[in-house]
Image (cartoon, rainbow, N blue to C red; front, side, top):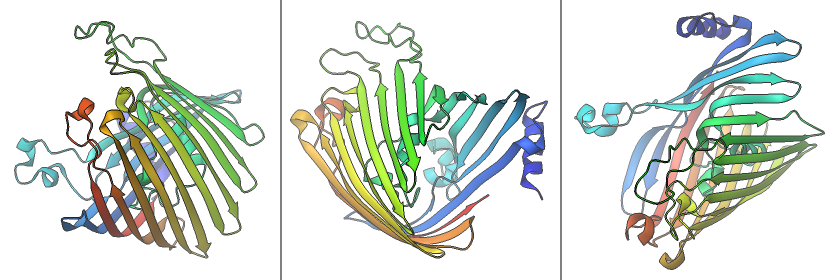
Length: 357
């Protein structure tokens, strides 16, 4: 059955009047793997759902080059239900729901670009992915497992420009939605503006080169003198494709993690991919270095390699291996001498399948 007709039927149930079937698309991804994991003490076998999703997106032509656009997307854990996560007494124990909210917004698009309002990935995250370095996304060999920051935020007011000679810019502001009523700290809870948090992404694509810059600021909500302050993050990424080969790298510097003053992070990584017909090999390596002031520093080297076979544009299988070690310092400010970056000695091997529609 035509998936656009299915999407139109679903849209008719949840909203009326619905947009025409020709402008509405039902889409999704089913991604499962079976893993052998070791954390240095315990070996385990697990079945995992990796960012499996279902969504509806579409547009309506409003005339004069203007369109209304929308998107509703949910994540669904295909491997575990609420009760599976929490055991036999799952309902009483409060296991997590298999559903999770992802991008969901409405907006307008035209020659000026696109404006959307709702829940969405930040422009910095969009820019990071646009650089083309994540070759096995949502697997254990995902490049962001090195430690790169990527965010999806509620209440975003975002703009994405048209492409100008290969350049695209995106920006988003996010109201803090605080009411200035917190009694604990003088000045706390005063993030009541329309742009308390913001994110910017600059992207370029031309020839075989893809490059991006991203910047984000998260406003301090606690306002504890000498302890908390605004968190900031900057990323730079680039990749180059020549024939069937792609190489590239990313760098990130984050300051005042979780808005705790002096808690910083630096991340760098390199990645590559080689295609051989319907088969591919991908690998990445990088390090996340956490500087926690008086609590010391933690460093996490991570590497991963994977091979895959594409049966079609929609269906593929893969095998991947990942390894991470390091950590062990404590952070008395955030977690009172509990390791915020605990000692890690983790490795995993996974066999997975991805089907998109």
